[in-house]
Amino acid sequence: TEGVARLLRATVGAATGAPLADGAGSTGGSGASRVVLALDAALAPEAYGLVVDADAVRITGGTPAGLLHGAQTFRQLLGPDAFRRAPLAPGRVWEVPAVEIADEPRFGWRGMLLDVCRHFLPKDDVLRYLDLLSAHKLNVFHFHLNDDQGWRVEIKRHPRLTEVGAWRSRTRYGHRDSDLWDETPYGGYYTQDDIREIVAYAAERHIRVVPEIDIPGHAQAAIAAYPELGNTDVVDTAALTVWDSWGVSPNVLAPTEHTLRFYEGVLEEILELFPAETSPFVHIGGDECPKDQWKQSPLAQARIAELSLKDEEELQSWFIRHFDTWLSARGRRLIGWDEILEGGLAEGAAVSSWRGYAGGIAAAEAGHDVVMCPEQQVYLDHRQDGGPDEPMPIGYVRTLEDVYRFEPVPPGLSEEAVRHILGTQANVWTEVMQNRARVDYQVFPRLAAFAEVAWSALPAPADRDFTGFAARMTDHYARLDALGVDYRRPGGPLPWQRRPGVLGRPIEGAPPVV
Image (cartoon, rainbow, N blue to C red; front, side, top):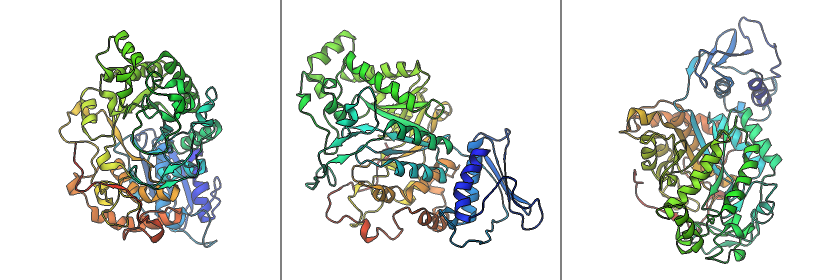
């Protein structure tokens, strides 16, 4: 229980001014102020019980993770000021309502993806987001670490990945069709010690970290750093730079033994930075890999013939299967975007279903584990309202109520397939999110609705009590204020949150269920 006690001292202790020393407080009777932490193996791993009576606040968890969830509920019961970093009124008496709560999550995978490639978030902002995930009882942090627009993790044996690949000369401002540019050179990366700190910080909060190294597409930053990784028989890869625009780059990895050895070296360092206890899964992307260069490449075509593959789809599958075998031999599990189903999927691989439900349904029915994160429902870069003041509006309108009515398990799945739904995550892609405040605006308050969907066994979407949820959000907005979150207000963006005249890519109408 000591780890949870330490976090309570750092959060509730800081906000209340109470030392929360071991053994402190009354031994009983009216007005007692003890907080008693205990573990109970009879509870499910992430389950907790919280009892507040005349003697004490008693928090019991099935594991330290469950105990932490109970501690977060205790913090909520104290009120919004318990989310500040120092007491507003020293000596204040804090009251907790008399309650008895028994609670446990519906899903074991309750996550959020953060893209730090399109726009970089410094280490301290990442740590802050881990705190925000923990406060909302989310337990998976999907860390998107490389893309066409930047490579964000130091790899000792390949230093040019960050010396060259972490920096671009300029950045498009707005959607990919915008004619606005920020001409300031842009970039950043995490040192290996930064990563170790982030992983340790997550582990203290019982958050698993899923590092993503995208293979074989979304690779232009890596190819700009090491041109031999690209299809040199088709394009002049030595002339490529880190991409300064958005979308899907045509520049993908060449299917060579050198490329395999290079990324094995990358992943060896990734596995050391992300230990199996915190990161049993490693995400290898596998999405949005244009095949044009492979179709034109004599080397790629020779590789297809040599391996007796049918086509370029199977060549991509060959990449994925190679790293699935490689990771499995080292005690890790591969997870990738639903495109990895194309051309056949290795037996132990798991799928992040992003293009809709269909990929996840197919994977689950085939016996693969699935994380549901359909773009049409839980991509938080999509706009929150159809009004003209939404900053750089992207995609479908996904309101707070829409997210609250999201259902991760689609109807019609067989009972066996339902058991393969590990859970769900919301994805935060940062093409139009230049800084922490913009990320906050897109993520909150919708992440609160998503967290309740991921945790609670709610009724069917149409039967959910959004009115009750909206009423509870009134209190939660005050917590977000105390935490300094620049969320979207119910009445719309504040003046400084708008971006008038900056081109977005709004899509009209309700999103399809696909």
